[in-house]
Length: 332
Image 1: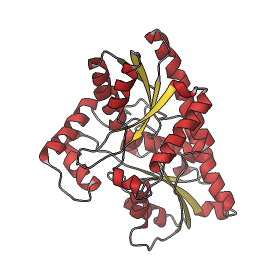
Image 2 (image 1 turned 180 degrees about the vertical axis):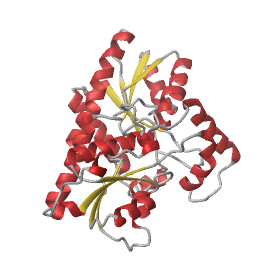
Image 3 (image 1 turned 90 degrees about the horizontal axis):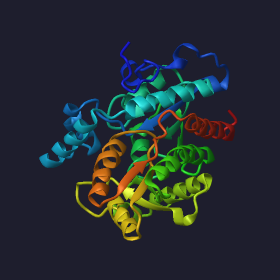
Image 4 (image 1 turned 60 degrees about the vertical axis):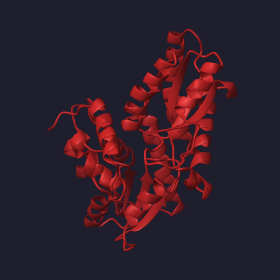
């Protein structure tokens, strides 16, 4: 069995597709016909796979060679993206907690959503509760996941698709736990209380002007986390990160602008907390840990961030609540 580079009890979820439920399906009745499908963005396993990966991201639309090389460079600096491994690990934890089968489908890499749909159908499940590992709803993420699952519309099972769960109380608690664990320690190192910047992935401006709820929901998640963590209004602000390289306007303010504003107010350090992501991947490990940290240093600032949720048991509890509420609503 391949050792896990994340040190997950010596088991590599992305290499070995470990599933605790595979040999312990003891449910009976209606619930035995129901499965859960976790949906995520996906990421390549090594920098050489970047061109193929990007072809899935863009739907086959070619990107300028310079953009492809820049993305390849970013992945080479972090070694690999642990997103698939963490997502499969989260699915396993959820499966154990629910005692239900939990499948994983990625939109842009293996295991692909289409393959997960086939696997679910081959097992004879009649109902599927699909949850995106992107709690805030946007047609640029959640909408694309739904389309990938639905395909031509002839699904072999009934699908209950969770459009959003940005305001789930246990999700806010999970983020707040990571915030409290890191913020106090970082503030002590800084010698003064650090301002917190909550972040989420930016989306094209036109997406929001056309009625997408993503911007509002991202900020509401931040408000819930701040409240859960006991932050006062003046303790935190919000920024959008990882604006695209393909042109057009993307929503802000950017992290760089926000760091500059805080510097102008006399701060010499910042604490970032990405609340739009559920695990480590390139937007965290490169954009925050490398690019934003280097930017802050050039500005004479220090930058810390909260640990990602990754294997958080509270995150699993939040997902359990999402599934149970859907099952209860349908009398399962």
